[in-house]
Image 1: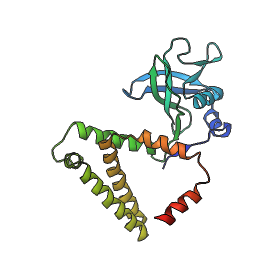
Image 2: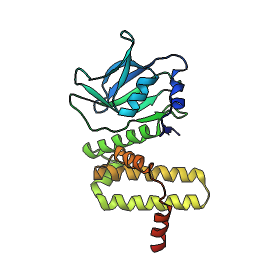
Image 3: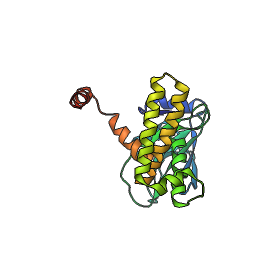
Image 4: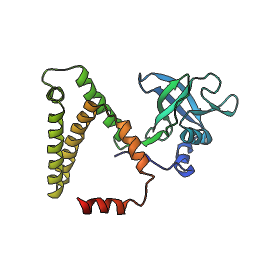
Length: 225
């Protein structure tokens, strides 16, 4: 499974500068997947990128930090930041625009043992499901769900949720993983159908990370239900 760093400290970030004081960063446009540029970051510019949500680099020729778009106006908002398995290259996925955008903290992902990332896999699934909604394919189960509509999709989500509970209750981890995968798939179909993205869910979860002291509130809800 991949690990997402929620607290960015120098100790977390120094791992990327064990081989060199600079790390190459590939910037990719999220919507088109176009590679926009290759630049370099040092520890300070990486820290500023994570703090501001916009790309900051280190100029090897001028030997100073520079904020992309500060003079040209073509700013780059970082949505996701990935590292490879060797911690010596970064991929910044974001949006480049000529005008200002509201700040949103980028999410830094570490690779899992297969070289991928959890949210990346879910996003790929989302894109596949989304394509089935716009480009119907004969014999596709996903297309079948979209054709049947929301009630059918909700019914399947409920069924899969029940199967997860049964598998977990039986103590069968292998079966639980299979049922969880089925549930996530059907939830993804529901999300596409309703126009909800994984970024929406991730944004809500990131807000909840800051909440504490909710035990009493949840206990009261359970007691009244």
